[in-house]
Length: 230
Ligand code: C5P
Image (cartoon, rainbow, N blue to C red; front, side):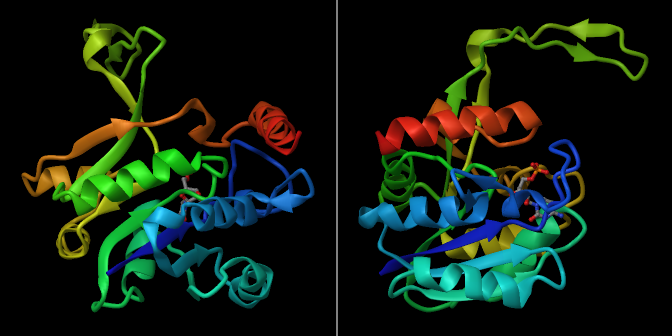
C-alpha cells in the first residue's frame, strides 16, 4: 500500500502580488512548487507513489516538465485547477488511482517547507486508523468573532483553538465521499469530512509549515531555506 499526494497549486496568489502565480514564485532559486514536491519526496516513510498537481489552466505542460526531475519513481499527473481550492482538489482527486493507495495527502504548494516529520506523522495516523488527519499548531493571537459591521461578538477560549496546516491526510474513500458532497465555503478538505460527521484527528504541526501568503512570507521562507542548507 502507498500514498498519493494531491497538491493544489492553481491559486494566483493575489495577496502575494507579483507577475507569476504563487506556486511558481521562487525561493532560493527554485519555485515554491518544486520545494513542496521535494519536501514530500523526502518523507520516505510515507511511501509516496503518485503525485497529482492542480495548476493554473494553460500551465499543465510547463509544470509537467518542471517537476519530472523531482518525482523519482512516483507517477506525476498535472490537471487544470478550478475557481476555488476545493475545485482544484476535486479535479486532482479524479486522477488518483482507486487501487493500491491507503492514504491520500492534500498539501498546499504554498506550504513548501513543511518538515518531513510532520508529513510522516500525518501518514502514520491515517495508517493507524484515523480517517482524516490534520497537522496543527497553537494559536498565539487572541481570536475574536466579529459581526458584518466589525463589532466583536465574542472571544473564544484560545486554549481550545489551533491553526490548521497541510498536508492533511485521508482514507481514500472518505476523501472521495467528502468531495462528492457540496463543497461551498470549504477552506480545507478536513472541513468537508466534518460535514459528513467524521471525526478529524489532529497531530503536531510545525511553524515551518506556514503558508506563503504575503510578500514578507518570502523573506521567512528564504531564511528557513538558508538555515536548512547551512
Ligand atoms: O489561496 P490560498 O493561499 O488559501 O491557497 C492555498 C493553496 O490552494 C495554494 O497552494 C493555492 O495554489 C491552491 N489553490 C488552488 N486553486 C484555487 C485556489 C488556491 O489550487 N482556485
